[in-house]
Picture 1 (cartoon, rainbow, N blue to C red):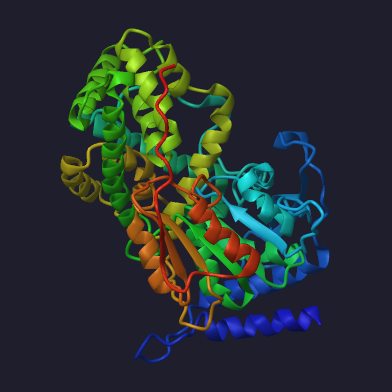
Picture 2 (picture 1 turned 45 degrees about the vertical axis):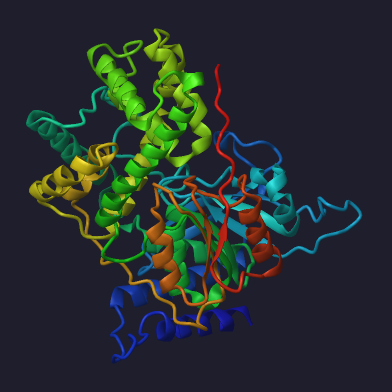
Length: 529
């Protein structure tokens, strides 16, 4: 029976996902590579369903508590060759508790596995099941096995690196807002070297680290978990390959949550999305400065957002001349304040560190912005996977003059993140592996079960327009917006309204009748020490 279902599904996918007719047009021709990958996924999923996952004690290398169980699932490196080389992905799980946190005497029926991805590309979800300990997640953890995993390339899942983790270069301390030609040339040379390192260390396998393969891996994981249909929650990048999954495997979807959605428009993946991100970070940086200014009595950095900006620039100039502790320069300052653009609960600590530094005490800044050598290998692994997936996923400009033109213009109005974003992604200009054409994510009404999209209106990492675009493309989806807020990843966070919609959907399959809005969560409380 299981074999018949899987083979029937593969055939239907070729009809629904690959040869669907554009609105008002003739049937599109199926992409042979995409068709082969879909059939290969069906073969791999059938094998995984038969093998299952043997969960047991987590290996010491995972550094996970004994409350978690770990296992592995085997997937093809190349889905067009399902009988070829295979790789193993690590998986973690906490079983559904079955206990209603509101009534200890009430048993909660199990609803299956909830698989989660935290984003990236390059982030691991192995710690995710621990979230069931938090009050906001206990109702979901009562009904679902909470399942995390490390996508291909991440952690112990066929790990990638583009540099020898034992011999990483010293971190760059400088990050000029207006880079000189010599600085640009040095960064171009570094980007070329990094791209060469990725190719040299990974070889021909490099081309198979893609978002499409991440979506296919997700279906194999679904089968290995014994789930006929997938319940999935993805945050940030997880929403992108989650949307690819929805387009490729709509009949395999039970429920899907897209939290802080990447814009899936093929014209935006990935170069255009990074330009939009730089614009959005400028807005969020202004929000942060305005918050600091409202608490000038605590921080003394200025009574207006502009005065706070001048305080920040004063710190940058001082660090450029003399890095704090010899290891925190403008680049590290920029990096730690960029993190504050993702999460406003970082604001008090960052503001306090900047205030203390300008008053003569560099220790708080060194503590939050300084290097962590013990995490260097993990960070390099994350960077390598990020680079490989984004460079493989789509065409990028290969002429430096295009990057220079576009970002010089952009930096005039959005200087906060623009050039750092360039240096992060520039290896894609010199990538040797083949580039894919991004899948045009679209599901007509009725083809996909209703799905939930969560977004903060002022999110910088995944600008709000991406959530609206995803909602337009996924038939039957509903968008819940946290108005006036900008935290990246809002499901299961401090906003009770957002969590109410998340619980109603995951626990009852219930969505708002139309797109809904929630008031913002409370701003962080300033800290004086």
